[in-house]
Image (cartoon, rainbow, N blue to C red; front, side, top):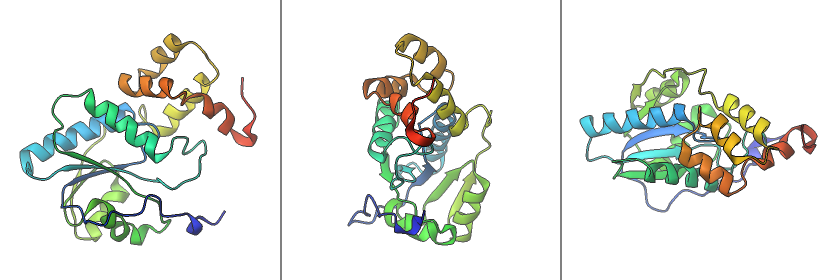
Length: 207
């Protein structure tokens, strides 16, 4: 289980990205807690640094498929994309995926190869804010409402329960409490829920 051997997928771009307002998450899947944070970051950007892009960073892009990481970074980029297209505004957004390196003290230095240097870091996570602060970034710590309602593991647990149900109407009804409609549509379209049944320990289907 040596995570240091994870490939750096995707590799960093040749061209360093210009500084922006960075939002970082795993987005497994993109849920309403994330979209609240992204909207708050965009409002902050428009008011405080309108010339900077909003840079949405998808972490754990190189993790093997598991119940923790069921959707690939390309699928999560697509979730982000369909959600952004369903929104007003958001005309200066970049989406980048960043592989894990399993080394928090070196994270920011590593991530800067992907999201650029010395911009603004917008987060609701105190430990991430500390890492970026220590690396000399301006950090904006945003309080997250209803954090426990919108936790990734809860959303994945709900999606898992729905993974063997072939009724799209029921799936939409249950997931719409925590996941944007555009993302639910995308997950149904790519059959992205069914795999969860096979990712549970031992790969045995549940239910």
